[in-house]
Image 1: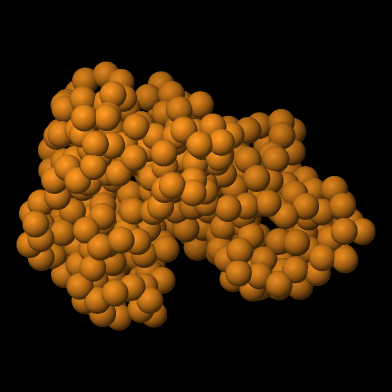
Image 2: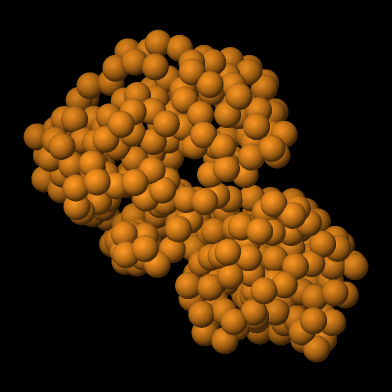
Length: 346
């Protein structure tokens, strides 16, 4: 089968690899229909940190080709979403809705041979991982397939930022980041009822998508100027909810400064926080890997199938596995928001 292979810093290639088979009774084999490149894939693409000659990718939708003897949730022929974490679905962590932290699970793309940017994929713990998409997948448009693909990671991750920040109806929310996750966080804040959504975007093309998703205001300033601007827009109090979808030290620092007293900052990472300062303002920090399967099954899959949201417009470039170098380079150069990979037809 064809698979996307990491060959070194800023080098990707499409190579032939063995097609995976059933290893354990809980496995499922998926024929991948669509996959994509994630912003987090750019971390190893730019800086290394991933073994050379290993498969890449952790987002996919596809058709079930085979299942192990212990799998009952899906059968061959079913159309499924593959969340980026795999999980047992049975332990207390999974039952509490935090399957992305399952002690028996892991993440696609972290182990060689389990990259989603490939023609076929082995899914371990299929019973607690896969999300079945109802209906006749052959009738789905390319637009619908793109939106369903976002439910493997980016839309659910943006939703997790909004859930972590506890966005409520009537809130003013500030979203840091205008990549695909940040844009989906804008859409998620709108879904949760925020009436004012301030996007910290400074790129016109991404602002247009943010507007379609519900952004009402934009702040292009950075650092102290950004803090002053947001405080001015909120009568000096700050935002009710802050969704941090960048991860840089500057972004995190600004996010915590624009939160009003009692607010929640969602999805911070790789940051040093002024804990005493946050303590006396009653500002909370929450975040972690998104519980994709829980969010999809509770709400997001229905929202997409009913046509209420169309997160697939974050894919502004389409490629094949043969074009994998171009797909990564386009995201690295910011000439596309997110690269979709057309792997096969339904």
